[in-house]
Length: 383
Image (cartoon, rainbow, N blue to C red; front, side, top):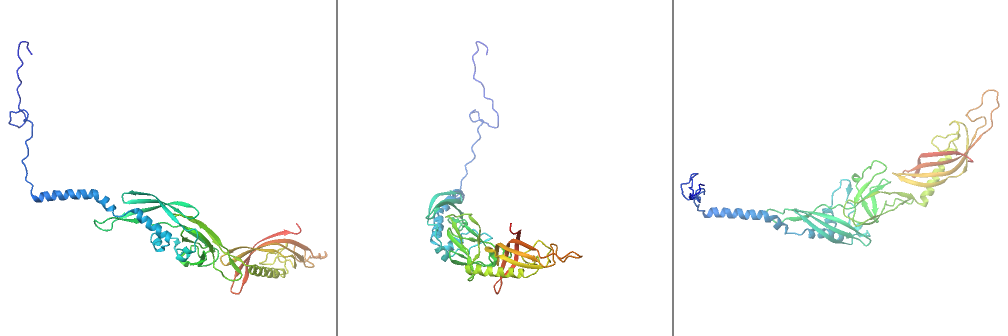
């Protein structure tokens, strides 16, 4: 600025496409011409707004139709009341397990059942709900979790909460006898052969879905010579993946059965004593001589016979403390046969021994018979 000159007002330079001289409107876009909306357009806009609101609110509104806690309570009440059809309906299927033990007579005969429950917490996340509960009997309590899913009942209808399958405890039984029947708390449970695993072996097994409680497991009575051996199992108040180990059930001989087995074993030993050779084939006796060395056996002390176990249709016994001696025949020697040449024939020699043995008996159509001698331990006598 040159001193002495007054500052003048600046000019406005027009730019753009506007024709106005007002600088405030030179850069302003003119308003679009107003459109007239008819009734149809307004209805469409309103419908779209309603649909948007429904899309946001519908899941919440539909889930208001039912409470997952009510569904969980209905199942737990059925479990305690013994509504086994409801229990089966919600049971987790397991390929190797059967539900033949879910019967009303067995439930009534089972002590220690679930007596009550408490709903601890219900958590809903979208269309999945979890219900945490405490189950109890007269002895203890355990936590369990039930899971529910919301499933549609139809278009624009309230969602229905559905209980996911619930696993029950499993008893795994391994009877040592060939059988299709077991007794639980005195109740006869028939199990089809197709459900047994390893049924072509001596150790078949089966897994049974059961309700919590206390169980006695045994095989059915089979006659005067065998007595079922009982196993006891306690299943705590749980719902979930809980399983016993293999529960072995079999028979033991009755007093008469043990006497009968002893007689059969001693009769078989008597036949061995009559063999006339040092090592009778198929017998637990054997002198330290060539097998065909001639001589005679004498039984000095009878063995103590005890029962071992049952495997399939066979019964294992053990004999201990048998004392016998083998006397070589005149003219035999420690190597068997007669001496040759001019040396005089040796006199009889005595081989005395203590024998422990195992023997397996099998029940046939007429009675017991020796199937095989399982093992033999020979020791010189006296030691």
